[in-house]
Length: 165
Image (cartoon, rainbow, N blue to C red; front, top):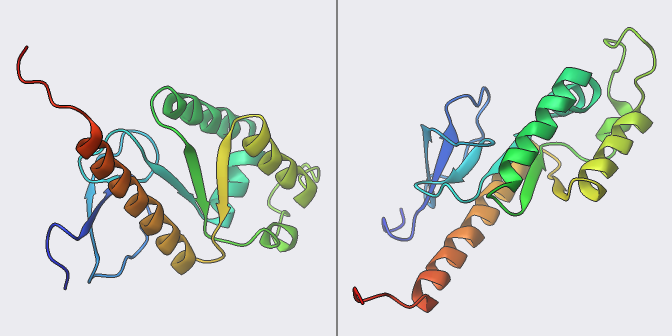
């Protein structure tokens, strides 16, 4: 088990229905409030990550109400968090084989979902990571939050401290 100061302390939003699991020797995860999205460093309101399963992602980008809600979350995050990162716990090609029969219009196709991915990346400046699996997603979240922790530590060392003058 790592020393407490070396541990990566991750906050999982209380609304997260199927939280990712992280390796216990290096990551300490606990439920809490993440203002926007699903995962953040503990006590760091400045940056967070959205995680999506395939079914959740498809619903978020296909249904009009869900898409508008997703874009509102992105806009809220972009007011203070950069970059906006979506970790998808599936591979790019999984969209092609997803069962779209639940959408009765018959107009929902893999191509429509791929277009939404392109819109997220190109039009809304969202970084989309296809992690391939839940395990891949947990590693992606952990390494990005580890990098955030390192950046905060570096910024703290290089930021001059005021002595009250």
